[in-house]
Length: 175
Image (tube, rainbow, N blue to C red):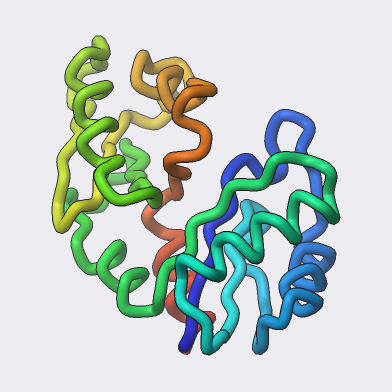
């Protein structure tokens, strides 16, 4: 089965790694057809194992190799297609669109945080097919109240975010 592992916190805040090295860790852990998409930690691969087992195996391998507490979320090709096919917002050059990959139920935690946060004009959050999507005006991503919530240590093992265009690139790599 084809999967994508979405790594959290890669090449930000001092956790730097080359994707070729990450791909080698996956290969050494028994994954097949391994390749990376962008430098933000999206690894496409094949395995006969279940996603839950892969998460444990790959987090351990990444933690041991790179000396940090690794968090990643493994999604099948079908699940990755859902992220791309469920985007609730029209493309608009004035906005960034993000989707959040994470543990089951994290979309409700994110919606609660979003509703508590002060928002800029036209900033929106919505859940579609158990996926939280966020639209934020360009230039406001890191400055927004919700953007700051995303860095909370209490949430670091529960999700990661990607610009929605990443899912299209991942799906092309999956074939």
